[in-house]
Length: 230
Length: 230
DNA sequence: CGGTCAGTTGACTCTATTCAATAGAAGTGG
DNA sequence: CCACTTCTATTGAATAGAGTCAACTGACCG
Image (cartoon, rainbow over all chains, first blue to last red; front, side, top):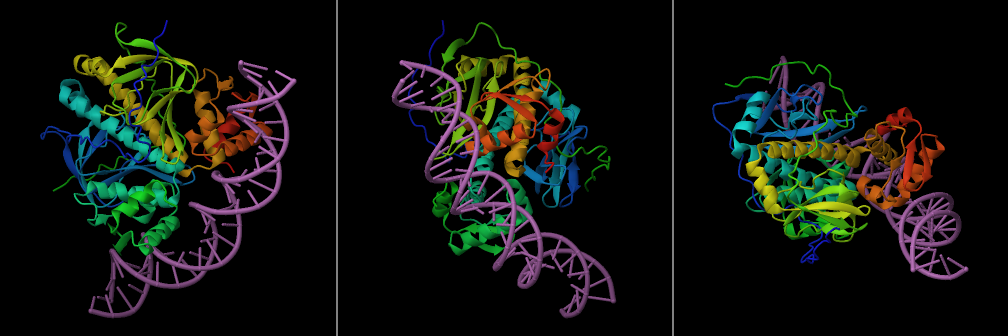
């Protein structure tokens, strides 16, 4: 009646780490003639969870965080977006999260309808958007491991390692968001973030030239901590 | 130089809960003539994280979980799929997670190329897949709040409440996966899951006719626990 | 009926949180 | 440019919530 799964052996099965296959996604192409640039200040809300999703946004410069709030104020930062990223993760009628500027930023605002039109008229765009959304979903799954199964030290190491990967060289200085953004992204408190960073510094894994930047002194040591080298 | 954000007041700003806007997504339509059915036993692996992504699967009957493993065996269940769901969350060359049957199930296997062909030839399919992927991403963000910011009791309540929502009536009996699947989905241990379920039972919120089913006796009480009514 | 596996319960431990005090940055205005 | 305020980050001590380890119970299966 039914076939059985061909036992093509799990040839490799590289458990762990694997932030994601490298495969870089081409930058999303959008027509130049639509949208308008909007300047937003640090911590300014771009849109609120639950509001009508009338516009979508692309980060031109700076950075944007998306977050969810609980009734009593607990906050979870779901993702960060930087220059080039399109904040369309959800095509529903209402925004499913709040978007805020991490630093003074410029975003390009597109009407919902212009994006929807592109989606039907431009195959290229539509495929790219799917690829990008899949990519975001993969990284969301990755983040679930961090939130659900990692210790504080492993979370911080994972976070720093991920930021370092975006640099051409892993030991280049990294810009950090505020301690509370880091904490709310990693499911920790600011105190714990502070303590773990201090510890990593003491161990000679990182340096903290100032509170908003890190340099990874020992990338190999950092990578060991990502999955726990207690 | 730049426009400012129109201060269309955050009219509502319904903080918290909001699993997701209701907006039901139409079931994904796929041609009948492609793919082949495959029977898989409970706990059988359908594909491994890291293997070449040669096929995609749709759940015909039963249930499938996708999970990620850490090197030392820690496991995070990222999502569950049930009848009708397509397990294509990621169009990369390699699977980014392991898929396993939760119970004896039937899945329909599609070659990667047949899905890719549909993606270019069938606008309808491609839009639907985007919508579904966005939906999954929304629920991933929702899960991040659970994993990053909720207590054990809140996690269990959130989980049960979500399952109850899928039923036509919230007090209908619910099928549960194993304690360890629940634990690995919620970032807890089996012991904690067991203890919290026992507590909810003692409080008269739920009943446990047997280990693999729950009935929600008091849905309102359960909903209060979702965001913490300590 | 015995054996295995899943789930439950208890006692203890430990990690991260909480609360509190201090130190340091950054911004404001004279 | 410096005093003053405010906000952010750090550090310490005590606490609590979930984890660990271990023993026990009950289902299921040959």
